[in-house]
Length: 134
Image (tube, rainbow, N blue to C red):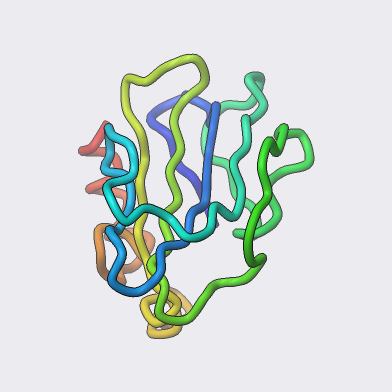
């Protein structure tokens, strides 16, 4: 997984959540979870305030330099569940990056594709909307 904040921003906080089938899909870009919230909050962590740019790591292995404050539930993707990853820059609520996906979404990716905006795309196709969002 790669979290890509705007410009030279770093990742100040990040979380991974899992929602059971039929539950609300989770937090929006600027708000809390909606009713029928998460069944499992897999991890919640504070990032290194000294890092800038993208942070890449396996989904269930946040960087060792991050202070993982919570680690509940399964440490694997749950079939049929909707997973969300949310991050924000250090010391700011100016924006948040949010990604929602299912195991089935990721299983359908070709080796050269990424999942963003609810669909599969090439890394090059992802760069444009990511830059426009900043």
